[in-house]
Length: 498
Image (cartoon, rainbow, N blue to C red):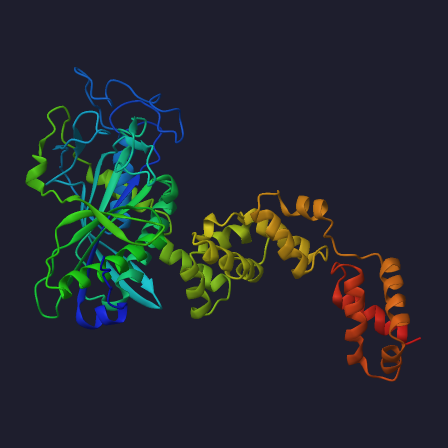
C-alpha cells in the first residue's frame, strides 16, 4: 500500500499562501442556562440538570438570560465591536442526537456584536485580527461513544447522550478571514486564541477551560497560489488546546498542499483533529447557511440594548490583557525579550499569581520558565496543566529563600509536587530533604573528609582555597546532598585556618 509523503513546511509556505479563520465558542459562566433556570455546574450526574425548556418538550417557552446578554456585550466591547441597537434570535435547524429540539436557538443575520478587532503580539510585532461577529446562542448536549478504540462513533458499540450541557449560554466569536500571515499562520492562530482566552478570563464571564470544553475552537484553513483567489477552506472542529490550534493549522496546510500538488481539489468539509498524531481526518461535508433553514425564533422577543446601558458596561471594563502586560513589564523590570519569553510560554498569569502568593518576580520566572516549562514541553501539555499551582511554587521558593532547601533539593521536592504527593513542606518532611544546618553534624562530616584527604587539607592550609572543592564534595556525599555547599565551604576554610 502506498504512503502519501507530505511536503515540508518550508516548501509549502514558499509556494502557497495560507488564509485562516477562527470560530471560538465560549461557554459563559452564568448561574443558569440561556433560556431556562437549570443550573450550569460542570460535572453533574448525566441528565440531572435539565427541564422541559432545555429538553425542548412541547409547550415549553424560552426566556432569555439577561446576565448572558450582558456578558456577550462586554466581550463585544472588549473586542472593539459595534453593539447592535436591535437584534434577534433565530432557529438554526439541524439534526444531532445531542440537540434535543432538533434546532438550536442562535443568531444569524442580526448578531449582537459586529465588526471589531483584537490586536495580538507575536515576537514583538502587533498583528490585528478582524472580528466578523460575536453572537449568542445555546450549547448542545454531549454524546459519549463507547466500545470503540478512538472514542468516536466509528467502531463504537453504543452512544450515550448527556443533556446537562444543552442550553448553557454559548458565545461564538468569528474572525474575518486572515490572509498574508505566511509561515507564521499557525503561530498567530495560537497567539490569537491565547489572547482571546486571557481577555475573556479578565472579563470574568467564563473560566475558559479548554480541557473542560468551556472554550473550543474551530480552525478554518485554506491555501492558494500567490495572486490567485483564496482556496476552498476546511473547518477543523472542537480543537481544545492552544498547542493543538497551532498544530491543526500546520497539519491542514501540509495536507492541503499534498492534495493540490497531486492535482486534487480540496473538499469543503469539517475535519477532526487527533491529539495523539497531530493529524486531521474527514468528518462530514460542510453545511451552508441555507442548509440550516434559518428563520426568526418566534418564541423570543427581539433584543434592543439601551445605548446608555452599553456605555455603562464599556466604562466598567477592566484593564485588558495587553495593557495589563505592559504594566507588569514595567513593575517587574523586564526587557522586551524577557516579556516575550513569558508570553511564548503562556506564563503571564501563572507568574503573576505566584508573585501574589509571595515569590519575587525573578524567582517566579525562574521556576515557570525553567523546570516547569521543560516538564510541560516533555509531556506535551499546556504550562497551567503541568501539575503545580502558583501557591505551591511560591511555597517552594520560600523554602529555598529561607535556606531550608537548596535549588537541587527543591527540584526533588518539585518532582513530588508534580507527582501529587502534596505541598512542598509536606514533601520536604516526608522525603527528609531539608538542608542539614546542624553545625555539629556538618563539622563531624568535615573532620571526616579532612582525615580522609590530608594532602588536600595541607594545600588549603597553604593558601590554595580552590582545593576546598574536594572536601566540599565529600561532605555533600556524606550528607546525601542536603548540606548547603556555601555553608560547607565557609566551615571548611574556617576549620583549616586554625
